[in-house]
Length: 348
Image (cartoon, rainbow, N blue to C red; front, side, top):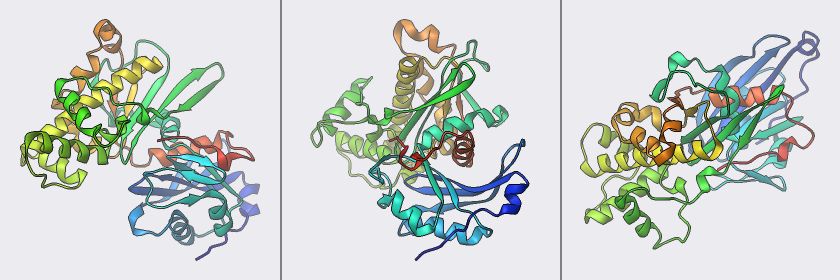
């Protein structure tokens, strides 16, 4: 299967309008859009479409399908995706298929395929968020001080990036925060860690704070309680917890929310993100009511003498299905891509 994209039409270029594909690819879903960027005007997201990754044999197949449906002549793609690009190949354990950047560029006939970390893209998209569409989980409505902004969220993995203001520009720092070691904060979490360490010496925090992590938590609690697990998928566990149908599912989700609060508090202190936190990812909007009643806020603030610092940090939950696409487009238009852009990536 192949599809050749031609050069962008000279008519659009003459009018100062750029059209390209912006994509946000995770382990479960890929979100793609045609982005139109008129000179001196805000970008426009067109023909947005969401794909289930498991239904396609490759990322190239998804891009091929979208390019064919988009019409026109488009040969530039800004791709937000978790992982590292090493020697033209994307290294990521959460994607359902291997990705070769160079092979995909050649197969699709693209002039440019630029890669950015997925949560770096979300951080680029944060300034465009309408706060009226967010939920304040902790802290004041407005940050009392300027400084770095943390974007973090559980999905197929745990992603995080930091937006850092600098004179005349903004720097976005992608991180490998999801790979940091799980540090238990309660006696129950200590027991969970002991259980998980039986099969692996290193237990990264995303092994618990992600969709698969929720399944791991549920399985660990079933084992500790001497019960047989009956739920197999993250959505089934969260749904049973939110609706009160399964006590172990509810306990698992409570541990998940409390642990998330503790980890986010640690990240705020680590990066000194005093200007605020945005929680993203596909899981949290689905459990919003549960999260608000959980121990998330108490664990976020439970940092000893640093509690007064954390009380001043706004923590907001965002639910914006297009933020990764918008962020990837903003990153691309900012001119941060270059001749080696296809190798530029980092992430969980």
